[in-house]
Image 1 (cartoon, rainbow, N blue to C red):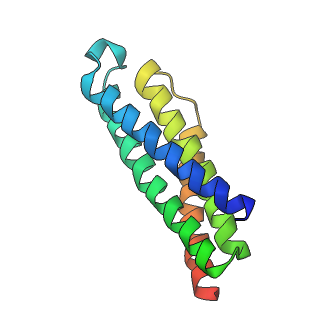
Image 2 (cartoon, helix red, strand yellow):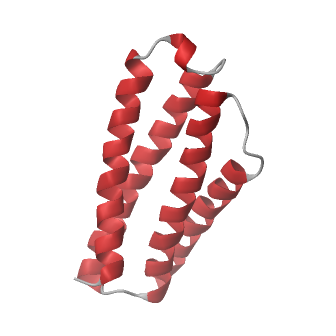
Length: 125
């Protein structure tokens, strides 16, 4: 199995695991663990992480069946990066109350770009 596929599939599994752990924390930790409004922010990050973990699994399976086409591989790697930046920044803000400037918006923009790359890659295949 090509390295990029192993990377995307393993990252998807780890992201889903982290999403489950974060979900348990968001459900059971006391309010003082979170910044004001942080529990809701964490839940939003968990949802985004879980949806994108599933998407990464789908991209990995697509690549296993259709080959490692350049745009689809790039879409998967961009999605992995965007998910880490966006969700990581939102989790950080949810816990500390400190915004990391443009990190979450940059991650979100990369996620949007990854979906566009995926669509174009599929259309061109």
